[in-house]
Length: 310
Image 1 (cartoon, rainbow, N blue to C red):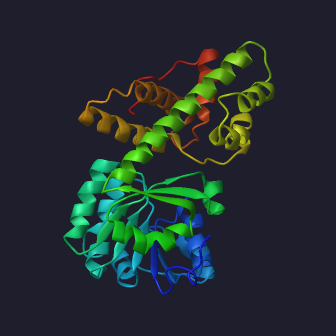
Image 2: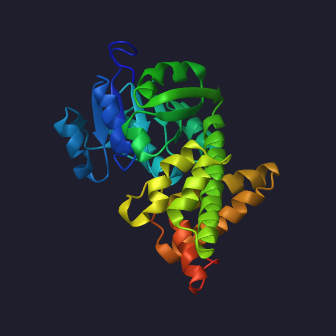
Image 3: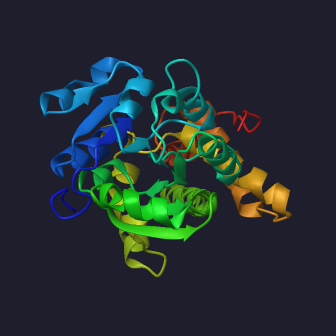
């Protein structure tokens, strides 16, 4: 983790979106020594940060006025739009030269639209989504993929380095967002494949732990397979890290991009069907590993809900 004394000394940071991922990310910004102002629609979520020395803003506009770099980590593009505009929005309080590191997963089409909107107000927006779980966020081990102006990236990089192990500038606006939705296509497909393999093994009489041990030791092993081990083996005892409803949203972004560019995302379509099944049977707020539980339910006679909205 970088420190403000080593890089970006004097940068004032604003952080909006103190949720499952945002809280540990903001904590790491504060721990790196940056003066931090935070905002969340539910102010109570800011209390741990306030206790650690952060300032809590009453509005996004107030936060922007007190910041040189603003980080947003929210649910989707509509949430970002709501933060940018209006009488209390970021753009009202932003001084020319502010860098907005938009770290949510919003897709490249929305990223380019919002970057153009920010540019009209002298704000340089980076699409800077992350790869990694909540545990990875706590350890400042995320990977950041960035699209936008190189100069803005360099200005924001000390802040990004405080919350990540690697930062990649991939090109113009939308580049980071495009790579992110591609990564989530892989995550969805891996989740579905592991779920199917586990349930097939279980139905054949193999213990779940033994089957997962083989998967984790085989040629298909990966960091994702390893850090999801506990969740797959004990889904009831493991907190949600990536909700089914968020993956459904991300797969929708990927498929929309594929349709625009003429890329047939056949694997993403199949994964979206499996995610919809799990959301219908297990609940949209449950973790991705619940795909396996949904398959178990179907194997036991539950009626699949493949027509659920993706």
